[in-house]
Image 1 (cartoon, rainbow, N blue to C red):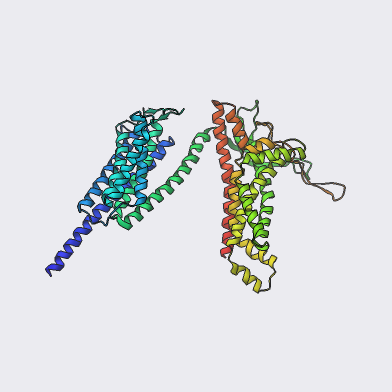
Image 2: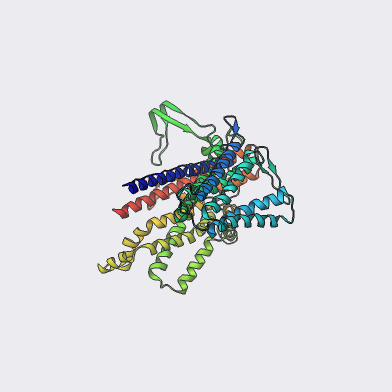
Length: 545
């Protein structure tokens, strides 16, 4: 009975120690993650490093947080080594951890040797020495002491550098032999990003109790933090553009309610205007409804928006049927051998070809054969050729992913190969095909070099290119219906080229116009993405039914 009581007491003690370790290390992981997130916000100027929060700058708060994390990690490692916590450390921190920590200290030693000590040629020796010591500590000492000591001291050093103001709001660094200047507004957030990542990884290993479980927890937190950082970076870029482009994009918006007779439109088959009686809501958005003119108080980008839409629509109509058809032939009909391998290598090479090469080819081949002038049609063909390799690649992979059981079941019912492809294989592969088209549209919609060479003439047009002229109307001659005239052999502007032209024209007021144009371009691309994603979801649901 006494033995059972002692065992229960020891178990309770161990459980209490473990819970304390998990509580403290979990708090350090959270603090590291917060430092990482705030550093990212400070880097993109959403929360500048010199902003005062409660009388203390953001940079100082970041340095204090990293100092706490570094001190806590070292203390937890020492407590585990002394036996205060129930952990399962390995005999060594592992080769991967030693290489990682050694690379960190190599960078620290190089910066100290080159910039602090002023060693112009001998700084690599200092870097190698620091990196070797850091790696040796992590590799030779027991895991709980080696990893926490080497990584924790790095975080602690980073925190002290920032909290003491060595790298702060007033700090400037002009590296020798480099024409750049790094300020504290960039230096402090970057330090917080790297140190926060290292602190989260080390504290997570402590949380897992070291050993296999600790390494798994550390890797999970490291990968998860990196993934969250990438998503946050993407959101920061989008937000950065939105914050700076929203005001110029929405300038001059007017709307209201008009009551009374309203002249609406003149249909092709009616000789009189249609008059609408009643309340009419009107809306005027000059930035997206006007062109670039000296007579308008607010210049707009409507011709560029329309030109971009025509480009993408034409490229998709050209590339998708050809690409999907080629993928069907290569996957379902052609024998797998040298020919298909050559086509695969060629399509991969074409997809990675720089866009300026496509533009130069279009300028030399298409422009002379299409009226010898820059035109929308030439731009559509060039961008269609750019999109074609990706459509072929993604369509082939999607067709290959369709299980062979689908084909065998259809063939067993006596269905022909083409009917099987049309009714079974293609519908099953459509979500993947649409994904490839979405990725391709995102690339071609933002291309500048090809359209600069083959499509544009006036970077700031005042009117939309009249691609469709006239309308459907009855005539006295057979077939008694006249269709609209489509004129694609004319130049037009596009959002990427207009953005390039605005930036090239200088800064000042043009910079606000550039940010507004960039935001509209982003919205147009996201609109194409939304259409593609909605189509993908629709076809996937059809397959699941």
